[in-house]
Image (cartoon, helix red, strand yellow):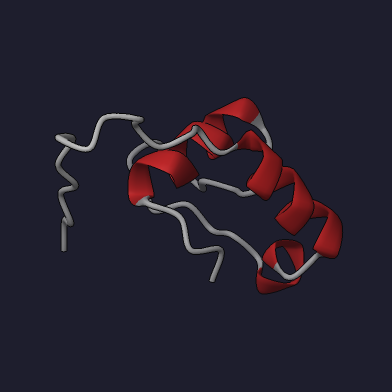
Length: 64
């Protein structure tokens, strides 16, 4: 919903930018829909994204 890669979400979870709970180590993170629909969080996420590589030779990998 935030149009972020898994790695970016994990980084932002660790930084406390995206609020979430993990009920035990190794369990999936629980992110509440109301939290990610919050306009303040959306704006914060947009400003905290890493810029893409300036190199045109940089490849993008899509993991599924």
